Amino acid sequence: MSEVVLQLKGLQKAFGALVVTDKVDLDLHRGECHALIGPNGAGKSTLIHQISGLLQPDAGKIAFEGRDVTGQKQHERAVAGLGRSFQITSILPEFTVLENVALAAQMRAGSSMRFFRRADREAALNEAAMTALARIGLGPRAATMAGELSYGEKRMLELAIAIAGQPHALLLDEPMAGMGRAESEGLTDTLLELKAHYPMLLIEHDMEAVFRLADRVSVLVAGAIVATGTPDEVRADPKARAAYLGEDHTEGAA
Ligand SMILES: Nc1ncnc2c1ncn2[C@@H]1O[C@H](COP(=O)(O)OP(=O)(O)OP(=O)(O)O)[C@@H](O)[C@H]1O
Image (cartoon, rainbow, N blue to C red; front, side):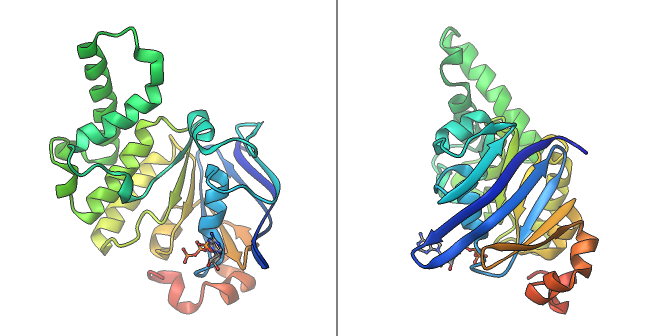
């Protein structure tokens, strides 16, 4: 069995009387993409928010690389390597693609570069940013103003920004949302290459992408996980089918 990178145990969260996370146990292994699927309002984003530290669970534990991070703040988890792909709103449109990613690399480097000369520091950050952009396939757009990117390219830029933070795992909340078929297939190809470097927990409604990318799939319904298994196992699971994977969902986008 491969190494467990992220582990949730008995996680619980309610908003008033509404239980949104119901005794969730879930783990993510090194080298794996674990997809979390479920109907609208099932509690997928709320779960990711608890993992990233944006929301505190009411009960349960979150361990990352063997350390209990349940009480840690969001920035502490980010520094520990829990990387989250932020929404487009975090992109600075008046800066180039390269500058946006270099800024993320600089935040990651913190004060570790304080003894570098300014020019050397900039060169090192730009190199780190170019490496992240090349991984995502956005290298040719490095000099473009971020505000001029297409919607799909902006989503790719978010991913490059997350990667420039040198995460040990990625939390991806609907990376394909709003993309056309070709863009979504391109991003799926990129993520397939990335998953060897970054174990990923993926929330996605695009079932074609999920079944291409995921090594395991968990189905969340009303805050509780009703099935976990390989894509084939989940596809065949009556509870998963009843909850979410109707005939219309198995082959096409949700
Ligand atoms: N801050 C909040 N306060 C109260 N209720 C909330 C809050 N955030 C989310 N909810 C509710 O919690 C439930 C779960 O929401 P969540 O966004 O986690 O679902 P989801 O599975 O990500 O849905 P979708 O697929 O539509 O993005 C929903 O009923 C939502 O209205």
